[in-house]
Amino acid sequence: MNFGKGSASIEVNIATQAALFHEVTRRLTAGEGFALATLNLDHLTKLPVDPVFADAYKAHDLVVADGRPIVWLSHLAHQPLELMPGSDMIVPLCELAARSNVPVALIGSSDEALAGAATALCARVADLRVAFTHAPPYGFDPSGDVADAILAELADSGAGLCFIALGAPKQEVFAARGRKIAPNVGFASIGAGLDFLSGHQVRAPRLMRMLALEWLWRAAQSPRRMVPRYAKCFAILPGLFLEALQRRR
Image 1 (cartoon, one colour):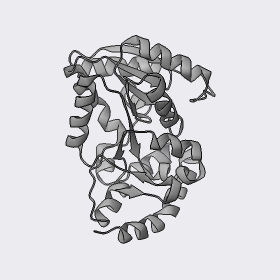
Image 2 (tube, one colour; image 1 turned 45 degrees about the vertical axis):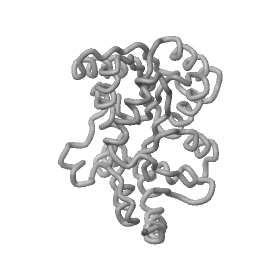
Image 3 (tube, rainbow, N blue to C red; image 1 turned 180 degrees about the vertical axis):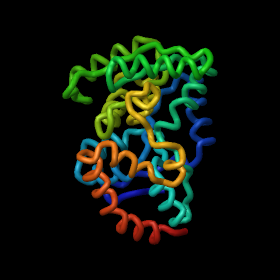
């Protein structure tokens, strides 16, 4: 299903977890790289006003639905998608990597958070190997020389799956760059997922997530940053609602 219009239109091309895991397993086994993006409302507010972000998104091979509004809109359009938040995909994707004997890499956040996430993942996933970690410096340019150096080091590390926790749009721009410099690596942009695993951020309780209230938890945790973001998200919902109605099959 497509979301947005014109040059900012993005297709969610993987509808189910089963389809995602099948395709990732195929690519890991074949040593074939990919870039995985998890589309949410925040991304849809940024894409029309950030052509670099839009171009990077279009370079992604796999796009899934992250956020219940995206899923609800897909059902309204009679093109149903499963909910696949990036944070929930980390452990299952690590399990696929371990079964395929593919080492993983972690990029983003801080050295402490990455170390904590690596420890947590190795404790939860048998035979998982973390081959590379890197926390870019403050003000990091995901398409600059520093990014190229990190990607070159990643390509030499032996890692076949890289989790990027830089936030949008940096992580998607970095992943698109990685498809050129490290074409045999799979890149998965997962936002705050590594911070959740390491305990550096506290995710909303499961009940709030089940009730689609994770946004409220995050707004309460960081109101100055998150309240304006969610206001923009709510503002585009009426237009997306009308688009979904028009796309009914």
